[in-house]
Image (spheres, rainbow, N blue to C red):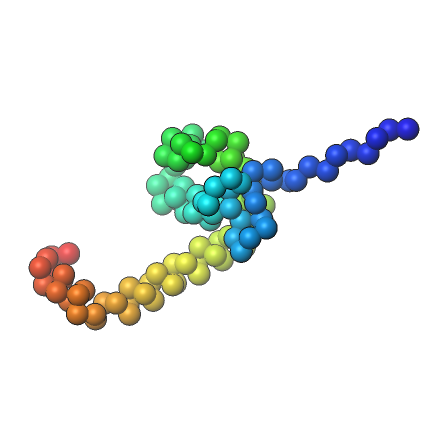
Length: 107
């Protein structure tokens, strides 16, 4: 009688046990790697170069996880963009922000 096949996680280098999927053995979220790739147009090899603590297997697993969960992660990216924009708008009129703009009015 054949022994049952061992169950293998579909994304062995992605930890989905927390609030957001992270790259196993790190604190880096999958969404952060995807955002870096989008912002800079980096290939998986360049992501590995920029984040040398990640193995190529971790990079590829995180990107594969993204493509299998694209809608969910894209929604997280949009939520983060809205949050950053709201924070920017709220801080725009803070005294420190006004003083800094006064030092460099062309910025």
